[in-house]
Image (cartoon, rainbow, N blue to C red):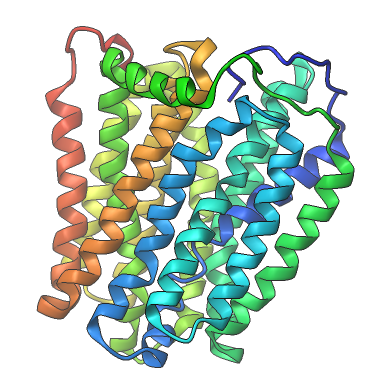
Length: 400
């Protein structure tokens, strides 16, 4: 992810120490949007009522999508160091509000703000790419992405154990000093005038150009919509997993342990990238969509712990493989607009995640795990259908 424009001031080269700090900061930031998933059953007991289940995870996903659309473009317009520090500070306040929430609606509002400010990870990643020496850029991006993926992986595990031992509010309180710590560290460590864009670009023009890119790049539209469906399927699973495990007498700590299986997502990224280089990203996307659909067939047909274990491996591998391959495609469309293209792609993906986090709990009361599996499978089926329907279309050579 490179910035859209050259930086107006030369930035110091990125050393290994600062690279590690930025990777850890990305992981700590993105982890906040996943904490509530394994804790859902515990939170629901504190706020009884069917509507609560849908109110908790969905605003976080909606907030992240809104932050991608509204906040990430600011990185091309202003001092990214100040923006990163400010987002971490507001993230800390939002987490404190979530920990203190006396009512589900307050928790929903705090979750929305948590999601928006957690997009600070998407400010750090392009800055790291800009500061990296050209011959180290790939390695730097890989290191920072590894930190981000580890944040996703460990968030559910940590949240599950903390919530089981000390309650769900304790997890949010634990995240507050972490956000404030990274605000302080990055305020000192990042270079001043860490501007990653052109001051001549106005915010309104930057937002308007997103619509223009969406209209003129059909490959971007198809990649975004396909990944949105796959991510909706992914989030649907994690939203209702804690509720399903309660039927086995298992708690949030066990739900969190399923996050460890997400390590396959870290393995999937380089494997998918190498396969995409050799055989084309389109093949990897098709295989990823098929694996995602197969995971839901396994969830529905093999209703057991082992079925969940094997299914979640298939799900993580499929979704992560498709995501890396879609990024391979969309980043090649217009290198000068890569930051804005990433904004469109990631926003669409998290809108899909929001739909999955809303739909799965909505049908839970009607048919439990079977209904949730049907919703997750439908998201995957729609993505697979779109992928197969657009193979070989004009303007999509790199999708073939």
